[in-house]
Image (cartoon, rainbow, N blue to C red; front, top):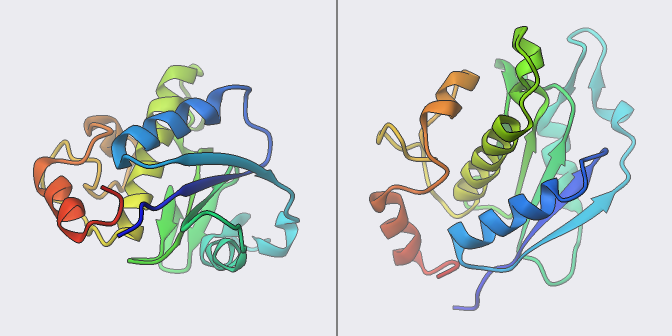
Length: 181
């Protein structure tokens, strides 16, 4: 099977080098090419004034509809507060065994929790969320291994407790479906 290529699509301003470093880490984890592209999207179409958040499912559908030649997986990256109707907020979301996902760093920032800004910690958290959502696109479900990147994360502390790598079981599943390895 051909290797899959992944594109990270940035919506909003990200610091220089921030996304290229994340792309390098994702490429190492999934052993495939990862590109970065900027995109302009009017986010007001996805804003829910009642919740004062952005509809994650609608954004995910928008990313899914983007046709970007040469890439089989697309992950939209945002800086806004995301929700889905059944949850108060989400860090990210992806179509299971699909080609699209989204991730936002909004709830990953220490400042959201009354703490001092920490760019290194923000980088590590965002990298984990992105790698996690890509895992879902390859067919991985939530893992019960405590430090696996595919473990479910309800709170930002859950993200902090896991590594940015797939556990051996999740790695073997990825390898067995020969998606990217």
